Length: 192
Image 1 (tube, rainbow, N blue to C red):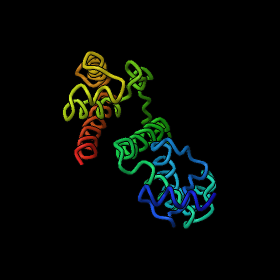
Image 2 (image 1 turned 180 degrees about the vertical axis):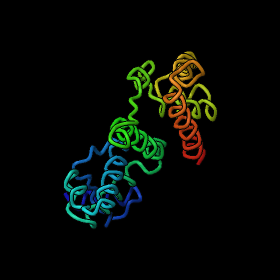
Image 3 (image 1 turned 60 degrees about the vertical axis):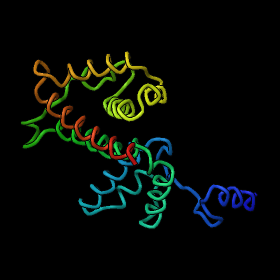
């Protein structure tokens, strides 16, 4: 069986000696989960106990973490979801920190839940990807995502209402900044 896998990897240009993918305890189909693990491990290292971060995700040591990172890059590295996943993970980590507050919880902020719900099943990162796919490929780009121009317009209007002048100002600022980042990341990723 191993020889057959080596042959298939060779045909795909991955080489006979390509490493076996290892995702530890992180969902291999979720780039955001990978970036969240990266964030948590980084925070554990900054706190002086990287082993706590490793244990949370089933990572044995630094070498194993490098293998997991390489596996995620091989699987997702050329997708816009991988690029945007880092921003998404950072956004959710920041929301958690804001909810805890600073100075003993005195300056806590909780974003209204309705601002965090997808619009017609589309979260803000997917909206950015859809916008750039539409810009670059027209209707065919949207079709790749199971959307059409009408749905794109409705989803965009829904998210714009959360980022507009009558929205919660903190939520609008955070979501607007995130969307701006997503648009640039999606354009860079999809224009390659």
